[in-house]
Length: 297
Image 1: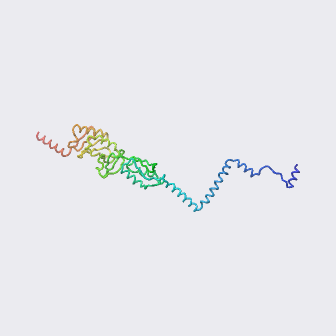
Image 2 (image 1 turned 180 degrees about the horizontal axis):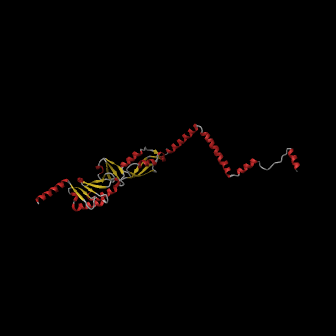
Image 3 (image 1 turned 60 degrees about the vertical axis):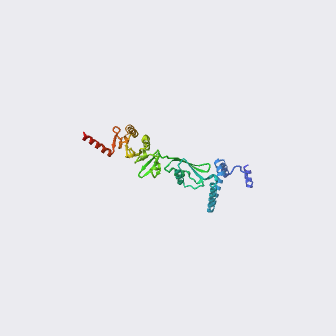
């Protein structure tokens, strides 16, 4: 048999070997690997496409064409009616604050909603001193809805030569030119006055029986209050429990009319020893009366 096979090979009639070649064997083994099949079927086409795209975009004219088409497409989308904001509606604010809001935003309508940075616009409105909080959203009817929680002034604070409106938290909400512009609000003055606005409001509430005579409260030394009445009469209140001290003065007034006399101050800083200071005219009259009484005796 070996001799016959040798003779056949020498005669040129080779015998077919069924075993695969080495490279064919390796290829079959690779095709049995899932990751290789995925890379061949998906990865290779993607690489070819990306390479072709990179070559195409490598030319300046092609890149400019893509950018122009993208800009035209975006402009067409932004200009659609459903993305157009036609106006602004402000709620919860006084007319003056509405005007200040419109000035702060500086918007020209109609405008595309794609061009509105709501976070930046909200920050501009929130920076207004009269605004406590603000909510902003584009409404279904195509308007920019702005809901403002406005600070409501409860008192006037005289700071230097200016009159400032302050709310219940002591925050400034605006300026006025004259006291008569907001004669309905009580007046406070002095350093540290607005930081103790809650105490000031309690004192104004307690002084309601003589409210027509009250001119305001002055913070003294950033520690305590003086209540100023008409005729420059002052009630000097203590640092601790000033409302209680004022109520004692009002009870004294109801019983003896002490505030109707010719006095310049009622000093309540020492609870156990309240003091009344009379005017110089009253002091002179009392001195003369005592002298006349002594001479007559």
